[in-house]
Length: 134
Image 1 (cartoon, rainbow, N blue to C red):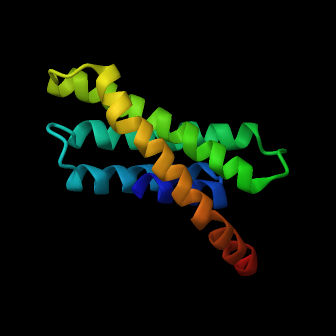
Image 2 (cartoon, one colour):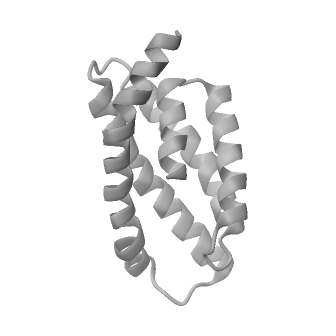
């Protein structure tokens, strides 16, 4: 859920300072709440990097007219980026005995489906509210 909120914030307010604040804030929260062994530092650094990469992606596809499709693609790709970075950092820092591929298939792939499904439900509502507030 935390990644979905990170992506949603960047999608609705695609600015450098917003991505930085959301990345740092999300990194701190996920570091404090992770149950993954040795996952504090990987969570923190990965969220900041992911925030900037998603902002870059959203900026690159700025002219794509369908915001809903853009949100879903950004969420799916963002989850892949986030999961891959987290696992790479966790394997290096925590020296996990399980391979990257096993963790990717068992943790990241289901997260892609879950996060994209959540964004599919949340984005239309948040986008409409955001337009009303502007």
